[in-house]
Image 1: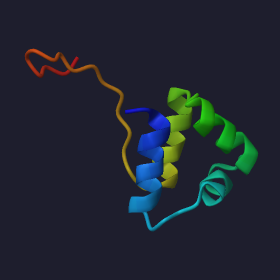
Image 2: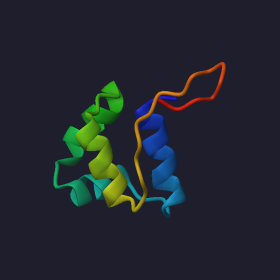
Image 3: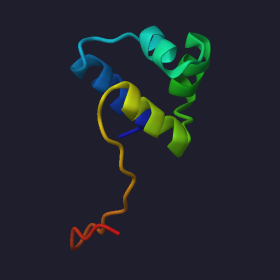
Length: 71
């Protein structure tokens, strides 16, 4: 699943927060966030800041499909 899709799910789960409100919490313009969402172009730093703004945790991991081992 793309990061932008997961972020939209989080926005709904956090009480239907708008993209504009998320942009305000991140200190960026709504247009900048919209462009990142449209291109699904997020840095790891962006994702961590979004997690903080939405009161959740972000971890970036690799999981082996055959064993389930997280690397």
